[in-house]
Length: 265
Image (cartoon, rainbow, N blue to C red; front, side, top):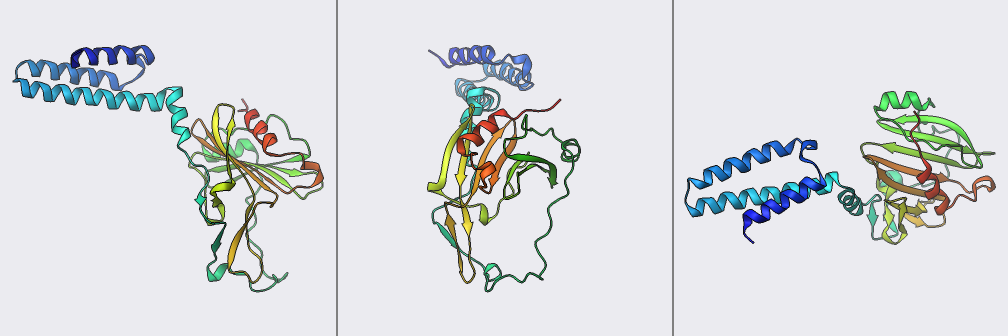
């Protein structure tokens, strides 16, 4: 089978999978191929082979990019190579001098900056510039608080009955705002499925105690995090605390909540 027949077969396959009228690249590619073929007829065999190879290579590259960006299997493959949490080989990391706690905190000392003010989801969407996904109902054991805006990230928050815990659904078009405290030991990361989407689940966090010069991973810390991506939006669902009212919400429960999110009209 010669290269011209191979090009024809590839073209037919791509046309069947993705009609050319739906992709603006095709008219330019077609024009280049036609020009190349016409020009090749006027040149010697070596020149003709070079043009054919370049055109064939361009078709292959475009076909691969099209498959990755526009077809469900390609998007699934792209998601498979995404790592949602920062991996770390160790279960501890050294603190900088400013991070070392040398004594019990002074109650009169200034505390951390307060969280962003609570606003409606509609207000957060207007400022962030994208539609936010929401849980269809308030999860059992929680009260709905509202939304907060952190840069271009929308945080939809719930508080456990009687306090002592929270559930936060964070979403952004720009990925996660991560620091060294977001690092996770490789063995603590659990690959999961949110419907047909790939995701990662982690229980635990790095903690540091007074007098210690390093942070240590605590797998029993009552913090559960679930991360995934859908339609170009990065999601993180986090459960803080383990009071009786929300003790039931485990890995499976969080995945079920993630699968239920909807976009309000």
